[in-house]
Amino acid sequence: MTRLKQRPHLREFDDPEERDRPLPRLLLFLVPFMMLWGGYYIATMDTTADPTLGDGRTRTALMPAVGGGAANGAQLFTTKCAACHQSAGQGVAGVFPPLAASEWVTGSERVLVQILLHGIQGEITVKGVRYNGLMPPWKSLTDEEIAAIATHIRSQWGNGASPVTAATVAAEREATASRSAPWKGESELSALK
Ligand code: HEC
Image 1 (cartoon, rainbow, N blue to C red):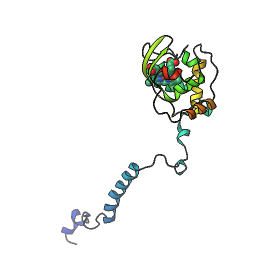
Image 2: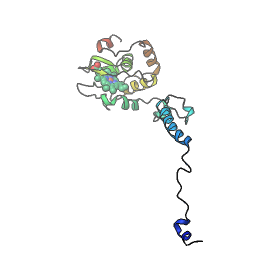
Image 3: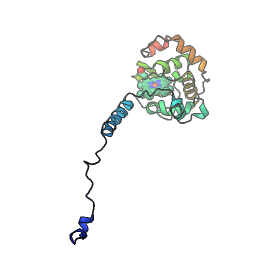
Image 4: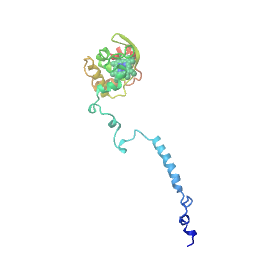
């Protein structure tokens, strides 16, 4: 063995070079392909697909429980109505009419249900004050939910009117099924009574 060969750097192997074992071609194609496919899959994903194919939980199961499954009027009122009519049903002077002691709330249950189903756009007088705003329609809610809200507001804040059943809501919904516009104020609503 010559002295030269004993030099440490000459005993080492050469550093590996990529040329010897290049990245497999297949991988070079596979990785971008999988990323593109992932993007495509997310973009075109059907969010209404059968949940049993996933972890089995339905959209309703993921929503906070409402009074043990049945529609909870108080909770629905807080989430859907209180922003405008206020939590004590007193409304906002001149803008959102009160529900407390309102003749529309404690009066005909049919008219009340119609107000909730289709909303109002036009003049309406509540407790002697004239309003001309926009009350949104709530027909996307179920019969049980509308009945629960109606029953709630008819029994709160000193209101003492009878409960409203889901069957009443179903009948009223059926009777005005072809309607798509809100009620045009109290003239049209009074004609319903
Ligand atoms: C975006 C605000 C808004 C929301 C949310 C809203 N309302 Fe109204 N509501 C109004 C306005 C404004 C009027 C008056 C309509 C008009 O002037 O034409 C009204 C009118 C009413 C009336 C008839 C008048 C009265 O005061 O008695 C009732 C009953 C009523 N709303 C109940 C409800 C209930 C129940 C909910 C929840 C499901 C609800 N509203 C959600 C704005 C709202």
